[in-house]
Image (cartoon, rainbow, N blue to C red; front, side, top):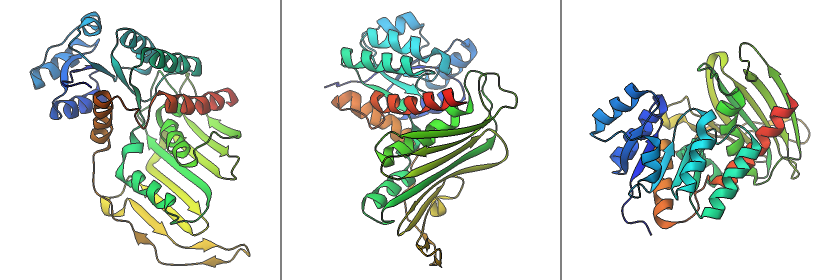
Length: 316
C-alpha cells in the first residue's frame, strides 16, 4: 500500500494544465516538466512546485507515479523509462501510435508489476456510466447497434490522425459495452491536409453477437457534435456531451417493429449527477496506485483499443 503519493506531470500544454489543476487539488502533484520551459515554469509558479528534468524525475525515489501528457510520439519512450524505474504510469490518450508499442508497454507493466493506465476519459463520464448501468439492467433490451459521431472544426494534430485523437474515445466506449473485439471492420476515409493520416473516417464494426457499431470522426467538420447512441429492442439511449447536464442523457422508448412500423413514445430525460470526468479518471489512477488494483482503463484495455485502431489504419 502507498501511504503518500507524489506524482510528476510530464507535459504542461493545454490538457496538461487541466491535469495539473486536478492533481494539485487532490494533493498529489509533486513536480512538473515540459520541453517548453515557459510552460513548465508557468505551472511551477502557479502551484509553487519544482520543475525537474526527466532524469531526476525517473531517479527520484520520492516520486511514486508519473502522468504523461506530452505529444503522442513521446509516450512510448517516456513510459518505458518510467516503468523501468518502478514508477506507476498514467498515459493520456492516445496510449501509443502502434500496436507493437502498446503490446510492449503492456508486457513491461505486467513484468514490473506496475499500474499502467490510459486516459480514455469518457469511460469516467457520469452520463456514460449511467448509460452502461441502464443497459446492464435491461432498459433498452437486447443491443442492436451503436452510433458514435465525434465531429468538430479542429484542433488538427500533426503527430497523429483523427483516428487516434477522436475515434479512440468511441472505440474504447464501444468495447466497454460490447465486451468483445469486432470480427469485421469496414473503413472509409477523407484526407484533407494531414500527411499523417485521415482527417475524417467512417468506421463500421461488426461483432460476433450481432451488434453493429458505426463511428464517424471528423476534425474538419463545420459544426460540433459529440453524440453516442445505443439502440436496443426496447428503445435507445442518447448521450450528447454538447448538451447541458439535464439533457446529456436521454431515453427514447420509440422502436421500429419487425413489420417496419414505428411505435412512438415520449423521450425521457435521465437524471445524472454532474462530474468532471478528468478528475474522476485521475482519482481512479490515484486509488489504483494506492490500493494496487487494476484500473478500469488499464494497459490491457489500451491494447484492445489499439488493436482496433491498428486494423482501421491498415484498411485506409
